[in-house]
Image (cartoon, rainbow, N blue to C red):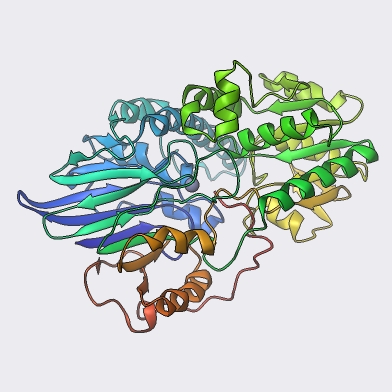
Amino acid sequence: MHLQSFGAACTVTGSMHLLTLQTPGGERRVLIDCGLFQGDDDLEARNNEPFSFDPQTLDAVILTHAHLDHVGRLPLLVRRGYRGAVYCTPPTAALAETVLLDSARLQVEGYRQELRRARRQGREHEVLEPLYEEADVHRTLALLRPHLEFGETLRVADVRVTPGRAGHILGSAYLLLETSDARLIMSGDLGNRESGLQLDFTPPPAADAVVLETTYANRTHRPWPETLSEFAGALRDSIRSGGKILIPSFAIERAQVILYTLKGLMDSGEVPHIPVFLDSPMATRATNEYFEYGDELIVPVREALQNGEDPFQPSTLHVVPTSAESQRLNRYDGPAIIMAGNGMMTGGRIQHHLKHHLWKPSTSLIIVSYQSPSSLGGRIVAGAETVRLMGEEVAVRAQIHTIGGFSAHADQDDLLAFLDTTGRPHVWLVHGETAVMDAFVPVLHGRGLKGDIVPDRSAVDLLGPGFPAGRPPGLEIEASSDPARAEGGE
Ligand SMILES: [Zn+2]
């Protein structure tokens, strides 16, 4: 039972794990997730590298959930020769369509923009082709097999696969993979048991090895009631100052959590009813899937849906479909909440709202998701006095509020609770920064568990002895990341 990770090894992005499993029918190669690297230029450059394996040699692909950093290179895998099945849960298939079509559009738009710029500089030959286009996405969607149901075992490439509820976003699953001689759990991304719309993850069964995400393995999230009152306080302060309230939001899960929370705070009178503009067609499309799969959500949401109510619709909600209408919002007078993507402010409609409002002291910017240090949002959180937006320097004079507790990721207590029912597995750490995983290894050792950091790209024997001190030889020790910036996480 071997694992080779080509993404989310010593980093939190680009999830892609190749499993080599022995079955009665022979060796099988199963790819778990095929995500896009998102972040700084060095990370994103990895998207253009050739795959370190021949896509045609894979027996199957299984997706844990539909976040771009778990599905975003799938159309590239298909473009480079993969023709087999891609297994996932039904909501993951529905959301993956929205996510991948949007990604293809961004790839093509980015390419055209870069080409125009490069032509003016006489270096158009340097511009890289888009990773994939819409036609590649349609070929990919045709391979999706939404046959995974929580708690039901499916045979995939001679391996018994049983998904469990991961509680991270709609449709998210962890996977139990069983061969004749071993049981392995791939955690995917696990949910924060305190926040959001998702039910808690279901306790996993016993296993010989667990490959565990560790995004927030070194910290504990603020309790949910505190997060709610912090958010309500930020909104009330912002409304008093009379300006626009900008909430950059990722389209899947975070946008729905914020809409649901806003509705609750307004209905209960904790926050005045002011107009809410949802300026994200992708979030609007994704919200439809939350209606479709409402049975998967927490009880109050499920009950509201059963009563024919819309739990994601504050009474003052306006949906902004076109970019012309989005531009017209710049001339809207009076206080209003504007939710727009993307969540890290590196692109999308939020950019023109920032350009028009970030320089005004009456504006409030409420940050509810992870901001990577190199992103525009990360620079604003770090206290930049000016930022470059759509070709202009813009002063940062808005009030900045950072609300951390909306994270959709498990914290250390959640991760340990997840391991509680798994017996005494060898725990292999992925999807975390090295410093975070380094801090978590001794916690595992303290519980009598073997814990090892999965190296980038090199194969490890999941049933083997692991590494001295829990880290692969030659792994550089990173400076500890600033947890205040690592809020949210996707
Ligand atoms: Zn995720």
